[in-house]
Amino acid sequence: MSAYDKLEDWISKQNPGQDEYLQAIREIARDVIDVYEANESYKKYDVLRRLCMPERIIHFTVTWLNDNQEVEINQGWRVQHSGLIGPYKGGLRFHPTVNESILKFLAFEQCFKNALTGMPIGGAKGGADFDPRGRSEAEVMRFCQAFMIELQHHIGPNTDVPAGDINVGAREIGFLYGEYRGIHNLFSGTLTGKGLSFGGSHVRTEATGFGLIYMLRAVLAHQGKKINGLVLGVSGAGNVAMHAALKGIQLGAKVISLSNSRGCLEYPEGFREQDIEWAIDNKPDHKNVLTALQDKIGGTWHDNKTPWHLKMDVALPCATQNELDETDAKALMQNGVNYVLEGANMPCTDEARQRFEDNQIVYVPGKAANAGGVAISGLEMSQNAGFQRDSFDQIDESLQQIMQTIHDQMIEDGTKDGKVNYARGANIAGFRRLADAMVAQGI
Ligand code: NDP
Ligand code: 2IT
Image (cartoon, rainbow, N blue to C red; front, side, top):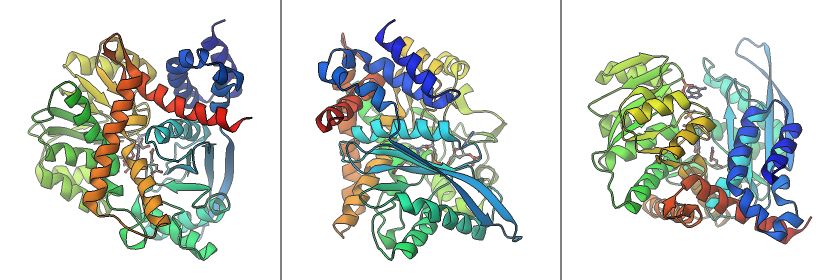
């Protein structure tokens, strides 16, 4: 049995039925197994198997009252995967599909992503199976408060610092933070993504989407190319998608799609900067921002479709895990796609990723391409710790530098026989940092 097969056998037995978690582990383990095998200390300290196990999983019940004064019950979790290189750090997701496997995969990936930023932040993820769709603001607030009553036992500015993710944006972070502050009588950087008036950082809202485009620019520059005039297909219509679209347009690309769980809005002329700005500003007022955008500017709606059947140079999946499968990968390649950069976490299935790699399509995994969000969270933590605030331009400049540095680490660890494999580079660079910390800290 090869070392990889042995590991695969062991992790499958440890995590039965947890498909997303196993998928995330396999993708990383395949890339790093040779590095592991070649290092006696890594083997002696059994670092690979240990990195595949979360340090702690907290599972709790969230009980709250809806607007009709009826009792509602949800499940909440915090997966604290690794605190090796800093306080646990990662977002909170509220979505009916949330379960332990999804949060475990997200927490695992977060450790490698956070390691790639070069900052002292460990990896975690949390959330609840709460569906905010159709809920009043008062209900969302009460849910956030009830969720925090449980979560607050396990977090703190040097212990675990949550942030946003799907359906957890500035509004929810505000409610969560208010409850935390109320309980602890403490103004601290225990959450990131806070409002600018109470310790939030400039550029945190924009960071993931902007960072994705800065990464695209770095990839293109490495090939001596420019972003101007390229056709970008974006999926999703949330925080990451909208800010990726905005920065893409600002840098001269043409963005031809956005999407949500109901379908895809195609706009072949390319959205204008003011269209996206309008959608960002008006999102809270619209249940379906894409319907509102189409009412305003036109375009073609494809019911129950993703954008991957459209012709584009660059695919930017920015919605959710496994939203781009092998069939989509084939369609994209038939239409001449050259670059796939993941704004979401693990949006490409393993088979899709394999297709891209086999066909020399540049593929940059989420743990590198979307690391801008958590990187600016890291800067929010240090601004909070120092009771100081940097300007928008300073932070935007730092974001560009961080994305360039992550790009360069991937080139360093992912180049073989003159060919660049960004995914391999990201996995090896993140793994080395975590594994070295594990060896140094002993058993
Ligand atoms: P938002 O809640 O702002 O937006 C999510 C978008 O994805 C919405 O358009 C939503 O459509 C769509 N979506 C969600 N679930 C599904 C699904 N099951 N099928 C199809 N579409 C879906 O979240 P974010 O933009 O913050 O997050 C998007 C992705 O980026 C996630 O993978 C997240 O983990 C990742 N990410 C986010 C970071 C951040 O800083 N926010 C940082 C790094 C990664 P609908 O409204 O119809 O559900
Ligand atoms: O997936 C992610 O990197 C996030 N949702 C952001 C995490 C953070 O702590 O800012």
